Length: 234
Ligand code: 3QA
Image (cartoon, helix red, strand yellow):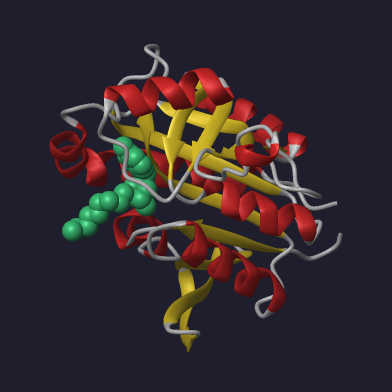
């Protein structure tokens, strides 16, 4: 059996606290103006960090988890704004692909989210998605699978949300997923993005986010820990 080190990443402290609280053999390392938590969960090695908000910080943290800490899988846990009407606060969505809704060189005739040598939509690892579906089944939870749109904006505007919906066919939006996807895909590291809904990216989003960040982050974190249990090393 090959040993493995699983990165677990969030953007905000609230998104990773429920995970760090359950680790054994915890060791904290300060690096690159951030903190990285190495430990074990039921015997499996994990490294946990929150990046801070947005694509740039997410890129930095994902890269460090892989290049400095040697993680060979990355699981992201956090909250998101819902686009799909099917998604209510507390519901879980996994990304089958991630795109950057604020990446725009359309002045040159390119599609939204596209730059040369990039992809509009970066697919997540299929095996990890299968693990997630098994975990959901065993817990009796509904998992939606769809496109997640990422951008450096907290969206609290129905028009912007509608535009993202029709341009990218996205079901949820957040501020880090696509950055993690670009890093992991370039470095050939299987990755998985899970989000629990905290708001609906509309007029009430700011208020809902504050009210549901903690509870939704916990729903996502608990699911991710069950995934760590379910991941089999080969
Ligand atoms: C929002 C967090 C960022 O890491 C992206 C939450 C949930 N709802 C969203 C929405 N639009 C975009 N993203 C999201 N996360 C950071 S702003 C609040 C910071 O409070 C996903 C997400 N509607 C800091 C306290 O001042």
